[in-house]
Length: 443
Ligand SMILES: *[C@@H]1O[C@H](CO)[C@@H](O)[C@H](O)[C@H]1NC(C)=O
Ligand SMILES: *[C@@H]1O[C@H](CO)[C@@H](O)[C@H](O)[C@H]1NC(C)=O
Ligand SMILES: *[C@@H]1O[C@H](CO)[C@@H](O)[C@H](O)[C@H]1NC(C)=O
Ligand SMILES: *[C@@H]1O[C@H](CO)[C@@H](O)[C@H](O)[C@H]1NC(C)=O
Ligand SMILES: [Zn+2]
Image (cartoon, rainbow, N blue to C red; front, side, top):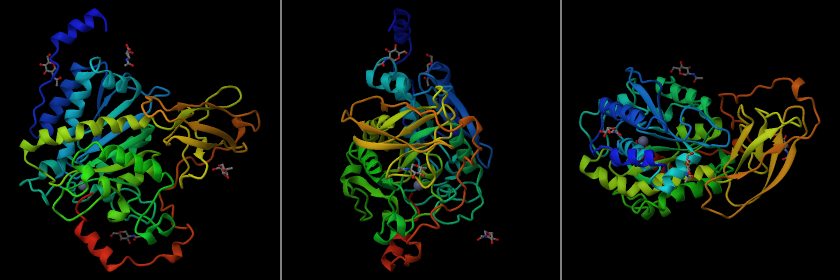
């Protein structure tokens, strides 16, 4: 740190004055704008769209290059308050923002995180719902849904069955946002329970529904991610802290095992946006009293920071042709964990694959080329602040400039419909049905 910066550091208050009260839209905007002004070199504030009532959907980006992607720097995001009456996540994200910006250059862990990661933070996806709450309540308040009475966590396209709902402006805005960045890892902050829940939320027999669960090919990674969060939260990890008799071993669960839902955001992120997302239920009470907010911040601070770091597990790199031109839209998948909608390189030819330590075969398939297989071994250094870097050079072969342009986006239709064993579908048991009804108003 040079002398001028040190001097400035002494002048700026270390703790920017963010109190532990609930911040309504106006106060939240004022806070975000001041942060963006005070810390302009590491933040970028923008709105990804508007709610039904015309409120901005704010996102604050924190990073060394906040305005644009840098090759090799993974994109991470947190989204909170998509259910307007689940309020803890909203305030925690404001405190996380403050913590990040005030510790840059002072705390090596945070400085390193800001140096190596682009962190997108959306404190409220449903500002209309939050403002609509008349009487804060632990179990049910108006304001869960958006202004048109749609549950936003049932409003996304679904990979397993047709989701016949009118897509809401808040959902459209998020879907559009996901196309503009190569998000790698994400979490969606809710309330009403205390658990880290991982995909899938919906399913078919081919994903395990006959055994009351629905698992992705990346289940090991998802379990690890959920544990990373839950194990650092002293109450969540106990798994039974809410007075509703729900028990979650170690504070984690598969989404479908808890209860199935249609049109959720985490499944959409994983399938269509190539982004691993989990759902965090942060408080037994959906809308607790303000006096409790400091306790929630204490319980979640370490988890929130450690979870961001997980965007650096696995392997990343660029795919090039034999002339060293980066190749966009090339399929890059790990053998035996292929995605129903294959993961592809972005416009810079980059890929990011979240993997646990071990040996894997990466299968790179460019149109007009034979699949190119590369072996990688992810080492056991858990403290690393970068994924293993592995650029892949495709041998001279097909004529990449002359290959027909294939359709690049996956269809927005149910993709698992034709998977085998679908015909073996059975009706959920009565017990399962009751569990579903009882828990419909959480995630
Ligand atoms: C921004 O800087 C001003 C002047 O130093 C300070 O009073 C204020 O608390 C800061 N606010 C935030 C949110 O950083
Ligand atoms: C972070 O980046 C800054 C500016 O680029 C650099 O001066 C500093 O040494 C880096 N710190 C860490 C911990 O990586
Ligand atoms: C979708 O919902 C609309 C309005 O409820 C209904 O008219 C239409 O038939 C539905 N379509 C399908 C394919 O279920
Ligand atoms: C590699 O991926 C391509 C395209 O997804 C697929 O057709 C092929 O079977 C895969 N090859 C291997 C050896 O996994
Ligand atoms: Zn919720």
